Image 1 (cartoon, rainbow, N blue to C red):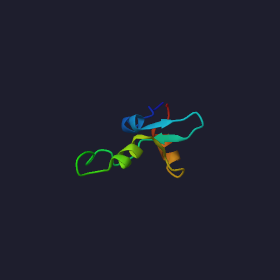
Image 2 (cartoon, rainbow, N blue to C red):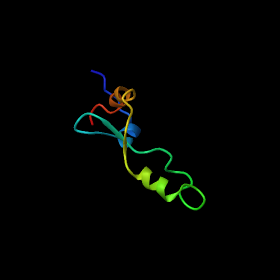
Image 3 (cartoon, helix red, strand yellow):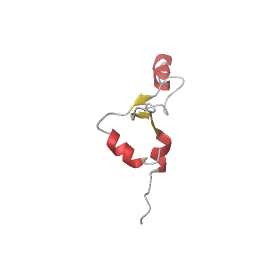
Image 4 (spheres, helix red, strand yellow):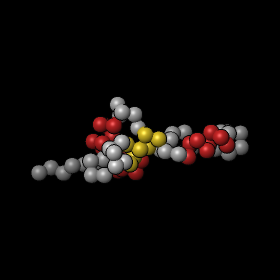
Length: 67
């Protein structure tokens, strides 16, 4: 029986909720966070998680089958 390979990067980036939705972190958090970059209000909004789009959920669930 062949091994089922998973994507370790996806395992770290996505989480499944009890209802079956895929939770993800907000994008664009790595660049220009202080000084002349993003405003405090925008950075505060990026702290919270978000849900992945319904169209991407099946592909993400295939990448993390054991989570």
